[in-house]
Length: 391
Image (tube, rainbow, N blue to C red; front, side):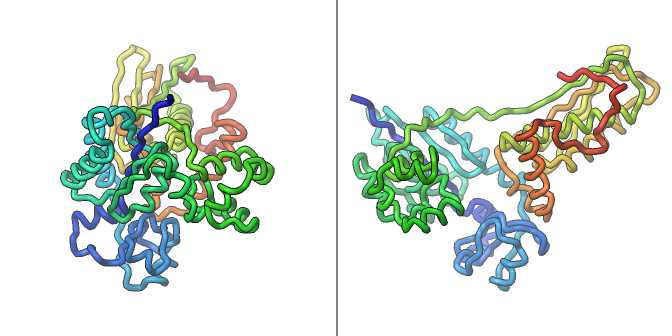
């Protein structure tokens, strides 16, 4: 007989807003919108009071202000949110056998087998209580046999609640819910299902899997399985990547500053692209220069968490200008990005750069399709006569 899994999903409620309220209690009970503060900014997170006005994450701040003139706009703080996320990550690391961190405010915990020693739901309840006690932040959870049902359950438990979906009740629990509750059902898929007359998960449960496959391909089969409470996806143990790096050794030692800077621009672009594809952000850059006499020097700087090329290139150039000794030939340059955290563009929405977000998204799609060198900055393009060996 196959052992039933026990999976907990935990999600911090309106995380950015909750952190801001922790530091400024006057925001409690108010319609709060965290994000870029100008009209060009975007709402990264909003309170339940703001949601009552129809405001949601991803909405332009200009529109949000029009919909809720009395709303309080707070500019986000990257480092503050990373700190509290780290505190919760450390609690899980010390308390559970395996956990997966899927974003700055969302976790899966695998408690399979622990019912031999504890009541798993009681253990999850105590763990949630510990997190709230040590951080003073609201957090919701759900426990079930798999990740999909637990994630949907957490949404039903909010705000600041918990729920246990007992084994064998998964289909009944899911049946009355909107198909939008199923992970991976986005706006386009939802509209397609609505056009088919499908609004509730129960309707999918009653459909043959072959019909869903005909309409949506393999994604249709996956959605059907999720609607029926079937998900074999394991909890992937969390190991935070500490840094990424790149080095370039020149075939001939050089003092051509323009050439070296172009190489650094290329290296920065590629590392930043790696960060974005892995949904990571960096808060520390280290530049290394090795001269022809094999003496090596490094310098680093801190910056707000980001994965944007233009912000990183600016800091790299500042480091190079400070570190470069103008009369010595350069043999090697290296670049390392560290203090990594899990995150996406929403961090950078605090900086009122929605056009930049869209631009980077388009560039990354081109790179994913045609290769990393499909899109290059003019400042990083190198004539064929100049050659460097990258590692």
